[in-house]
Length: 489
Image (cartoon, rainbow, N blue to C red; front, side, top):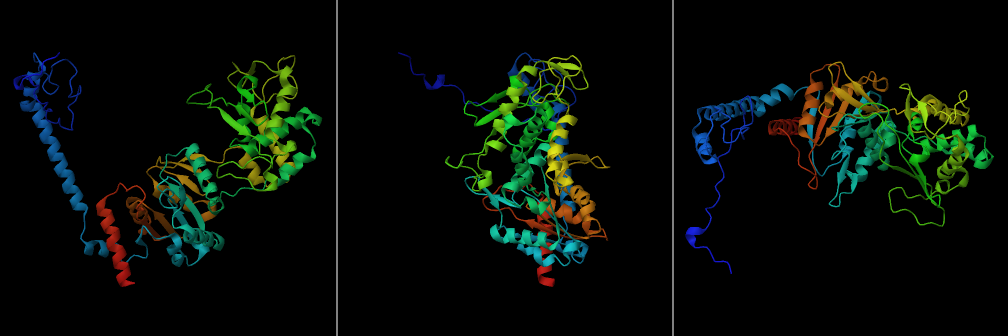
């Protein structure tokens, strides 16, 4: 049986060492590179205890700590110097034609309507998270302000205002496409230039071709390429990267197909994407899926003549004897065979070479043109219309029609939108953001430019949302001006 320690045997309570200064000297970390060596003065000690005592009095570390204290005091003084009295804020900003307001956390976007004098001269830009949308306790997303906000957006759009979204997300094609998806789920995509085009003429054309078994290899290739584009997030030029038989699995009951795409460009050329699943549409007697995409229209039910899974299955069957490892793309390296194969052998090549991206785009283009689809929608089906652009000052933005992703440069994104062909000549700008810094920076960016009039709103964060990281000085400036406007005008 173990003995109980006497009080004199009890371990001494641990006392943490004093905090190290924030500023680090040049060279190794203050936590020590060599054992029991001071990284301030580089002196060595026989044990950690003596090193610890030394660090409390080390002149080098004490100087670093003092320099850090002075730096913090200087920053605080500089921040205080920025702060202006309410009278100074009003004198500088209060009587400009541009204004900035506080929009209550319980408010909605209908307050913007009174500032739309000429819709043909008005541009409206909004942040996305916590401005257009709001999350409940279960993390479900809806439109902030409810029906009143939806009606306001629809009215401004119908009247002829140009509406855009500028979100503080990293500028990449993936994030801007995700933004489009969310706006589509909220049924707001048409307001921001992201209209979905009518696919029914294409489906009717494919039905008129008859069963897959009766199609030529060219028609079967065109049909499969088009159905993949219409039923996934893939574009015509993506189809050349879909793997062949070794990268495709079709369910035994023909309910889905899984596939992979190979990356052909930097940063990871040759790597494969995560597995992607394409499901067939449900049959009328099958239960509705428990998702936002519940189908309730007859044309959204399963149809054997336009089912991408059945078309894929027939294509794999028809091309089985043509498959193998081929040489493809400009690098002329051996790559696993692709889904889409050239319609005719190249010389004596067996197996057949894979199609290029130009050829897969031609498959889709031919079908859409025959269905009389507008050129704008054909172009957006062949290549991803989302772009990452770099402005003259080096700022990068992701752009998809009227939506922008700009991590730290919302003002530049707004200016890029203002200068687009759709917005040319418009001078009245409305902007809403749940972050006070963004609302103020946008106001300040355009307020002193005589060619524009901007009205900016700080839509204070909802009680159920996340608090903002902001400069309290700017919050006070906005509150001061909002109060002044209400008392004066």
